[in-house]
Every structure is written in C-alpha cells, then in structure tokens.
Length: 195
Image: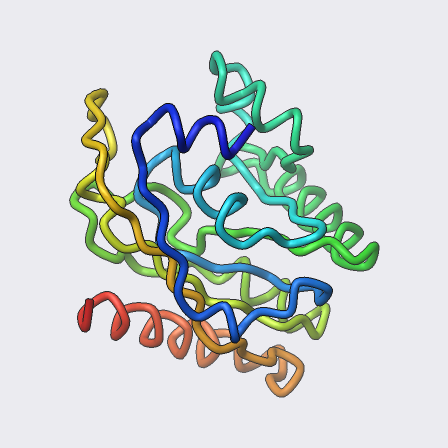
C-alpha cells in the first residue's frame, strides 16, 4: 500500500545512507515529522522486515489513512493527558520490540507547521534506554515542499530519505534521557541544515 500511495502522490523517492541500516536488526526509528505521507515514505524507503509505529488514536478514524494504519498494525496512543493509557501504549511498544519489530516514533510528537525541526519529547528516548534499543535517525528532506500541515494540496517532487548512523541507547542510563534526546535532536538538525 505504501508503494501505491507514493506513486499516486507523485513523490520521486531517493534513499541515501543504506549502508547504515541492517534490515534484520531491530531499531527505534526517529525522524522529523512533516506530513501524513511520512509514514508511507518511510515504509517504502527503509524496507525493514518488521516495522510498526505509534500514531494518535484519533487518526485511526480517518478515511484511507486510518485504513492504512490498521492494515500495518500501527499502535494507537491515547490523547495527551491520559497518562495511564499512554503508558499502556508504551508497554505495548516494548512488547513489539521484544518480538523483533522495529518501532517508528516521531519525537516531535506532531507534524511541523513550517517544515522546521521542533523540540523533541522524551518518550522515545525513555523507551530506547529502558529496552537498550538501537536508535536509527532518519532525515526526510523536501517533504515540506510536497505538503505541510493543514494544507490539502500536494506538490509532486523528489524526496530524499537519508539514513544516519545508528545510536546505541544501551550506553545511556535512565538519568541520561535528556542527554540522549539532545544528541539525537542535534544529529537530525545538523543534517537538515546541511541539506
């Protein structure tokens, strides 16, 4: 389905840094979040054997997109403020990782309005440290040219998916969540700046 959505939308996909990914390994994938096509692009470009993600619960009721989320078994996360259910979602994410699934998480928590990288929340990095996972930073370049939040028009263009070297979260302790988060944010921000 991801391949069809990319073809229909007119995105020409370019993938860089494939030497940085082992498609048989389990990762927590982190990326800059621009629009709803990010997921289609990532699934198509990375070709990981087993990949799941976390998505706002409300998006599952949307036509087409919600169908795609259910079809690929994306994990719904409760609305902000519902701490108990949000924690239950993260526990489910731990189960997925333990079963050998990679997890895609947008650490900004929402799509960027102007295409610029926003601050990262800590959830993905707590999860990475607690599970001793390997983080795989991925940079989406030109997705803001294709579409931005709250816009309905699409502008077919070339989109680059740049896979950066993995980051081993097992070398960080629970009291270093902020350090890990800031390191990952700098890594993606520098790559975007140089693009």
